[in-house]
Length: 352
Image (cartoon, rainbow, N blue to C red; front, side, top):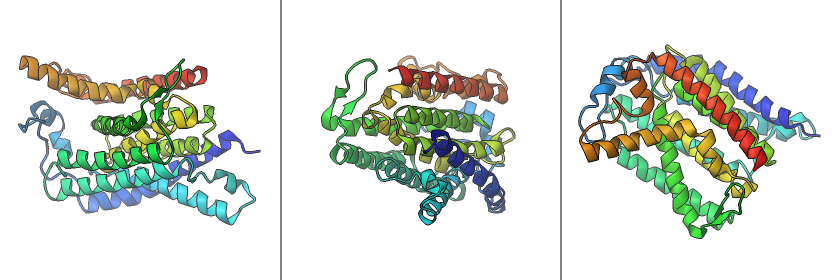
């Protein structure tokens, strides 16, 4: 009999080990080709210099390589390919049970992971070779909206997804509106990728979130999604091993875009497709990401209405740095909150 723990833990461990093994090679080339910004700092949404951010981060941006997310998606894809190959060669062995590449559950999220990684990699390449801001945000949002629109259409047209699960109640029917809803969800999660702003912060948060959704998928008997989510968490922990202060590299777009877009798909697939509540659970499991986005939105609205800033700097984690919290204190407290949210999310998934 297939053991759920074996199905989940072995791929996660393999992804972690592969990540640890390939990181020295990735690091070698990132430093060899000086894959960092040549001009530190960034612009605010209004076009002016982001003064508070540049005080905190501009110096490190010209010393720390970007594109560390390569470690994450490379480890995931190597794990998927390795286990699929072994499962094909040894059909009557444990390897066959470990192969989680399936059309029904993981084909879409893995494809999304690849596309997100490539789009992010292009942005990072321009970021370090052409100008300090990479591909414009407007273009990135357009591309993400097109991609998520196509995926949303696939959910609606091919998989028959037209409802959103509601805890302790019947699912809400929204029909074709599932497509713009998915576009909104994907763009919102993509915006939360700015949590990759302090050494070690994003790795710990994303690892906790994907571990939680692995647990949610197990509860709903979506074992391939559970294995994929655990694999993503394992690869992210390998990245985190080298991203803790002082970071050897940063995740940047090739990592955050691939993770956030894939998370959007997994959230959807653990909703009505799995007779679950993946979307509703995001408000618990993904609370650190939601707060990150809301802090930016609130800063913009407050400034537009009053002409003043509510936070010293947005998103929220940089505000804590600006008022004097050491970076490692911000990171570790976010880790604690993320772990608690993951536990609460799994508990909630088991009782609704």
